[in-house]
Length: 596
Image (cartoon, rainbow, N blue to C red; front, side, top):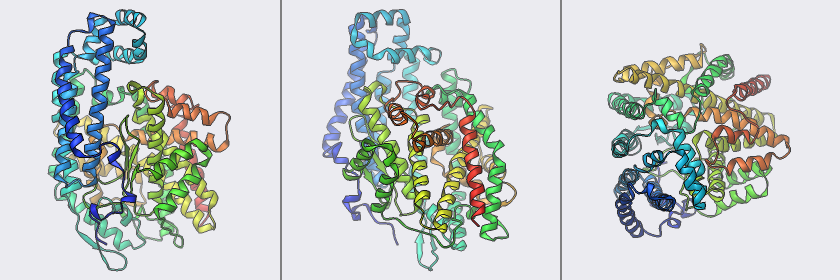
């Protein structure tokens, strides 16, 4: 079936963005107002030392401007993501990005001037002005990163450079979502189907091997035709990160990326090391897959298809909502009521449409309710995506409700814990509800796939980023040949001797949007390990775990990520969470092998 246009969708399955802005004219009016506020804010430069009241006024004005800017940016981009070929919203998204740069530039003097006050002076200000006490952690964080904050003039220059630094990601997104096409293949019934980013994984799960292979070749053939352009875009992205890291006196782009959440680099390295030690488990899984599929050669287009032959099920979106709600009932009545609130009141954009941004996410602003973008096709994977993104959404809800604006945002390192915890509760609920052996096999296979695609695959991505950014740090220009060689060799290492590493897979790096947010994906793997630990505590009914977990969800960035997780008894500075996850993988591999 052809993909529907946006105006052909049922409004009941579309998110309600009018809750943010009733119409675009209001957005334009607010945009003009904030743009002027940004220019007016510059008059505060040099006035922090006038006294605590002046400092408080500056910080509150800054927050007000940032909140308005966030509303403008989020609304424009979500409108654009509905249909990335829509020129009006593409332009609004571009304007909002420029506004972010303008606002960042206008307030670039704030941190340098706070640092110029010294910690002792700031403490005196807080003692004499109760309103400043709210910002105690804010001040502490600034002084903790003092060595990476530059002079006001340099901070303003870096703020203005950010717009250019965002260009590689913007170019890739436009190319990947609006311009690149993959042609048609025939499905198992011989009906033509257009290959899209949204349905590619669905096609790779087809029982018909010819469909899987055709989709695989169609996808990577398209990227292969543009490999040099995509390599140049990736090179520009790594160069931008290297520039900012060097300017801010970090030893590497990775050090800069991890420092924002105060994650020790050893956490990243130990993740890769632990997963390397667990590669024999992945090799065993591939051996089982090859045996069950009864193929002479197991190819890269064979690794997504479910291994059960007689059980396959599609879920309507209504069925998906019911399953998610039932599975998460162990979280308590309040959590379930928030799920229902999201299901009933325009939080979710459900269906794929022509030009819609691929993938899924949860977003929103401090002043809005959470929003979730899906591209729902009815697979079990889509049901899990719903649970995953609602985990993010409810995390945001709790954080925004319980924290002031300055501490409401949470780091990605903990964000993935909330989403994956939901997934782990859902899969174990479904396994417990399985009505026959085939369904149980299917669900355990799905759980094994979560290990493959989250713990192993995201760690492989993380290792690819280390290697690619490492070459840029050495002064090299990243070429398509280099990137393909790195990526191909990693696939060979991670999948082992029982898988044919098809040449086309070397191009997969070019279609991963997360690579344009460097050193992001490792957190899916660490979050997976932490989520397994927390979901286990919830299912075992450990005393106080629900209140501890709610405290974690409500924490925002009021504590370091590592300390937030310790509220739930999980210490990610130690290897045990990753090792425990691998032991669970081992356990389910053993059980799965005995079912055949």
